[in-house]
Length: 257
Image (cartoon, rainbow, N blue to C red; front, side):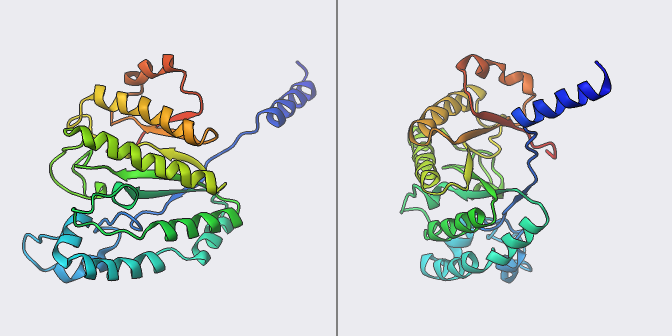
């Protein structure tokens, strides 16, 4: 084709299917503590040999619920402000990923975690809407830990899905996120679980959970996109999901690991 005709055809195609580049920022350290992101919260133990405080579970265990609630309420109220969202928008960021743990959504009250995160989450979702930013709500920690990393809420053993209640509690958490998404148009996607470790959780368990998560979230919030982490496996490992016709979903890969 002549160049002017080709350019016109390309422009027409872009109008029909605009290229939507995600320019995103992860709001880490807000609702899921990680010592390297929020060292000030862990500073009183930094000189303690073999510190017992290494994640949110141990943070709340050592402090006890009343003191943990006092400190984390102050943290949730101050860690992200509207001015931060405004600054990100001014830098052409268009997407926020917000990690949050099951203990904020479908908690087991016998555990040391504390609750109260959701009002602060809703505040950020409103700010995101005001500045025209999209949000990915990321279930970052699930019961028993899906990877043994501190960013799952509990460092150490990988125990997720060893109890039938773990999957149910995880799905209940996704249902809460889906209902929140229905109330906040800034939410564009929900991540079923962050970084499940293929070396600790059987791939078949992860796959079945993804299928259940897709059906559940779509039944509550049909417009929401689902995001599935690749469990640190090659993309080819997930071809079995294709026949499930999971329209409106993405595979997420974290290349740093």
